[in-house]
Amino acid sequence: MDTREARDHLQMVDQILRQAEGGGSWACPEMGVNLVGFGLGAGLLNLAYQFSSGTHGAPLALVVAGAALLVASLVYMVVWTATARRAAERVSLRAVHAGRVMGAVWCSVTVAAFCQPHIFNQWSASAIWTLGGAISMLVNGFLGERRALAGGLILLASLVVANYVPAISGYALAAGFLFGYVAVGVMYLTGIGSAHGRG
Amino acid sequence: MDELLLSKTRLGVIAELLTAKWVAFSELQRATKTTNGNLGAHLAKLVEAGYVAEEKTFVDRRPQTRYSLTAAGRGAFVAHVREMQALLQGGTP
Image (cartoon, rainbow over all chains, first blue to last red; front, side, top):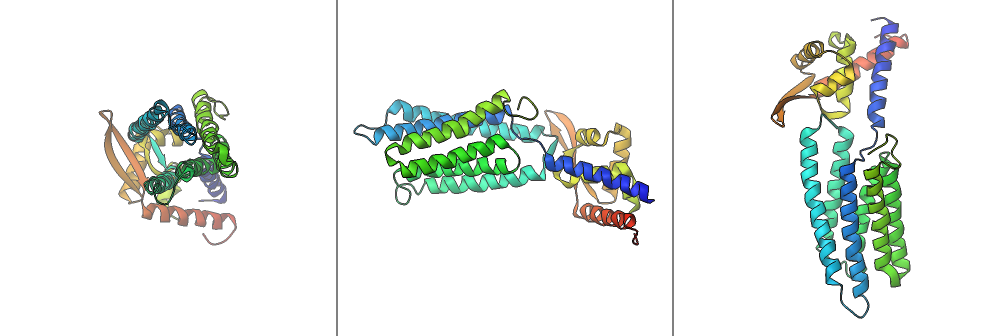
């Protein structure tokens, strides 16, 4: 091999690796559906608990609708993930690592949620889910998905507001999910803010 | 230098697999811009050398062949790239 060939080969390798590093966005309409479902569900539950912090109890319709949306989104996510994984033609190591981070985050958040009555009481129980959502969005954001980064920052901001303005904690956490999850999901569904058009 | 990786197509395949858990044949074909038969022959050599692992599966009742990089393939790629860099810098390859 001469130096010209070696340079040629190295340039090709460099190009392939740069393309893989760039990777583009993982945002897709299916992920948008998930974000909208989870965001609306969590937002409705936060609103329900905000209403119940007054003189009356949580509106049953809001609690049922919120819980139903969360369960439906969870089922949709499991089915979509399994289908997409089976049909995929390439699974990047970056996606595998990010998936492990997401798994660790949501596993920890779920365990923490079951500690609700004794350790995480009042609004901290809801805030745990906001924190989990913020971390997962920020992980996507740091890997190059700017809309997810914005969503993660909004969710973190909602935590700050919920803490320092206790009278509206539920509204703040609900708004965090509405703008940090649902709005980002709608952007994924419509292709707004995507470098490659739709999704 | 590793004779097996002197081929631009085979080096391209290894580079493509370097950042992936696995890649399907069709995707490798798109990435390397080669024909079915050509890519198949190159992949067979890489599999035979133990640089690449092959897995046959079914997706929607259609066969799909997936490839992943082995530890030996990763090591060979790193060593080969270092040798090419040394060659360009005028050192001993």
